[in-house]
Length: 588
Image (cartoon, rainbow, N blue to C red; front, side, top):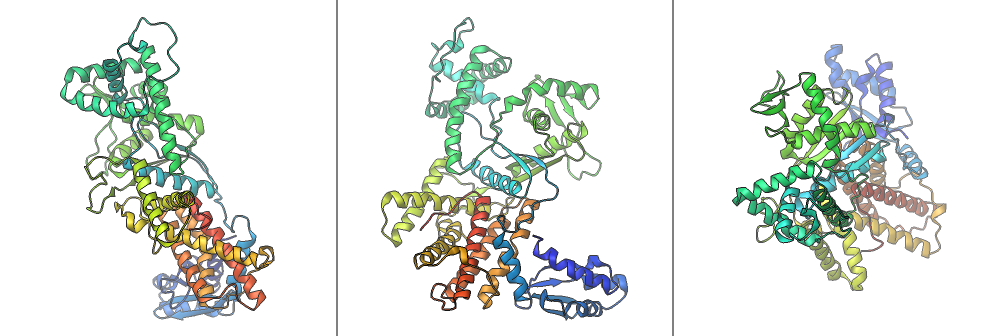
């Protein structure tokens, strides 16, 4: 089905053309004055200058050709030149009925699908997931789902950090603590143990200790640097230890991402791109892109129009080692080679904008990507506490992600038990589902680039613009439908007819927006637009619910129409929350 505004525009543009004006002036949008009309066209205001004519005269000419169209209940020309449009109830209900009869809710997928890789994880091995990983996971997962739903081929990559100094620090500290292990004996030729010689809990303690100790002990830091180099050069025992670190870490990371309902198609690592680096560096040298500066190999990426200083992109450090720029460039090569990526999206902290600007410029300048390959940086803001500062534990430490999830779930559980008696197991299960909605909606309802305050009390509220409020609306619909069926009603025999009152019309008008909202969220890579939409749809439904006695309605045709309408609202809400990355319980 066409987007509703496209359908209206088609008629309005035709009227502009038939009235003697350029049809492009017939653009239609949702009214910013819903008390006056449902849709509006402001094209006459823009056309006035081109045609040397008062805008209200142009609007009058167009309205004269529209007023008898059955699509509209009314079309008015309002000075100084606005065209106010109200759709006919029959047209509204027919469009909504078409949505209800379509398996995909009338959604029209993109006519230009792309092969997209989205990088939205970025955790380092040997470290637990903490609140700093939350936004990348939540925002990236939603964008991935939205882009897939709209018809694109999308691959989500966690892109693990597994190749830097942190591995050398762990190896160095493990040798101090467990020198008897065979991994440190270069003469050892046997098979290494299949079981890791440490647990995740030990790794989580080892790395911060080694990191802190190295800052006070240059010799220790140098040894860790050498261990990193030996690992990257293929030392057999270190490679075996490294694999243990990855296996133990990934198992723990997956467990925590599962709690967030976040799934990656790829578990690629920084190290996977290493094989592309030698040829890449060779090419950049041979073609004259790269040159030495203070011993480092760099590529200039500044452009004449730059208003601020853009440093060169460092390809190799002065000691010949690679860095994040090197790895990210090599990863672009890998993604294009393995997946024919036409677009690569990075969902990362907005403070990394300069880094990715350098990398993208370097990739384009050196021909690593084609001109039509899109490289997209989506920088997210900080999740802050109520004090306005980055979220921390009470003692000032970094809060583990699983601890944050537990705090949210406990808060929802307390809310549930305040209002009703329920078996603990059931209440805990519902709390986990509702808690995830509170956490994700609390994040996604904000524009990604903006900082926001993490407020548990507000996020878990069952009222207002929150995840639990949207879920409560879905659960309320489920309750209505269950009662309808228990009273002998048949969901298969329902059919949507013209709205009977304003509250029903408002629900339908919200449903009309579905196609447009989802496509706009995909175009802008903006999940917050879906959040705002489902809040407004939930609000419209709840006003309708409170204003109409659905189950006791005596007119069977009207009653069945209302049931069909709430079924559609439920389907739309459930599809939207799936795109946001959570689902609804059966009851709350």
